[in-house]
Length: 373
Ligand code: COA
Image 1 (cartoon, rainbow, N blue to C red):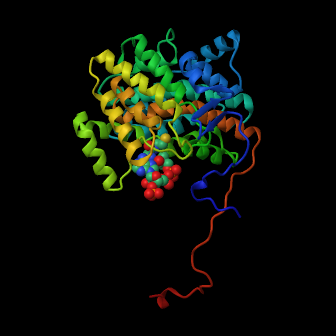
Image 2: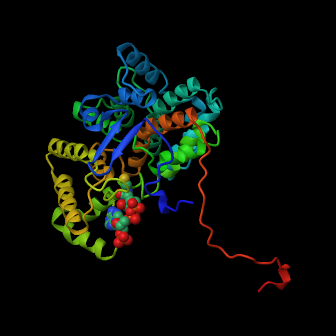
Image 3: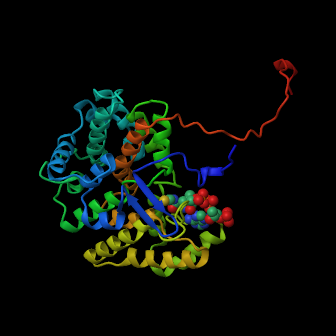
């Protein structure tokens, strides 16, 4: 048997969706460098790329775009449920619950054919922003907003959150952020989704599990922790003392380190640039300057580079997204990768079932309950 704690460096099978080079700091989606896609593509194009393994031509793009627009709104019963869930709940938990409920309103729910899976992937990707923005508006005491068909996915997401048309900078920032978070090989949540459907459970079951895995602080939940840390520090003159305090206490600095990258996460530089642009727009460089200082310090002291969650925290914060919505926004992007991997798993399935090294007792004999100490 092969022993690999945390499954480090274990390859579980082939995948044509995304590739990571941890030494050179490259992330590739189906042959295209993320650096190219982040500045040139739309999120809709990237979802098509992840699901079909190639970029769409114009006619395919138009059809795909239209399907995404047509599938945004939620069934009335699901919207009603959103008003009944306690408004103090963690938004990611509500999202996970609502995705599970949605499966009951999808006629393809238990249909695992390739066509049905594309339909479900489209519905899920189109609807996640509607769920997330409804959760936020309801807890603020406002009514959810209907989607705006004239807007693309990124702009519509912001519109449904705020009720106002987003400017170009915010639309572009959201589009880039969605592209950068869309897929990342066999990260914990994607692997969870693949394990679930490897039993031949359906796509909704896989996505519900993936959302659960995303929420932990060592995975997608890190972006929320980063922003809490930046707010806690408050001003850049206090950053050094704060970070030293964390390191001396042997605590982790959220937004740093990675299982695969041993250099800068290639997504980080795009998000850093967005933090800078958003700070310039607001004429307040606090979060950019403080983040730069922390990044230099953690690299010097621990040799650790920023990961995707570090700058995505300030990007979202400056676009007015509440902190506990950061991980749901991550999910709204990663849904495209989760569904791509789930479809790939169905296409060439073998049950994912590893082994454990047994370390418990042996040769015990059953005794009656009265004889036990
Ligand atoms: N801050 C401080 N120390 C860190 C660290 C961080 N962010 N990330 C890793 N380390 C240290 C660990 O303490 C450990 O040190 P030790 O050997 O002296 O105990 C060493 O680096 C290896 O850490 P380990 O947890 O085994 O690495 P991993 O590959 O299993 O973990 C992460 C990868 C991402 C879970 C880890 O880097 C982390 O916890 N980062 C912070 C959370 C985060 O940003 N998550 C988002 C990931 S995209």
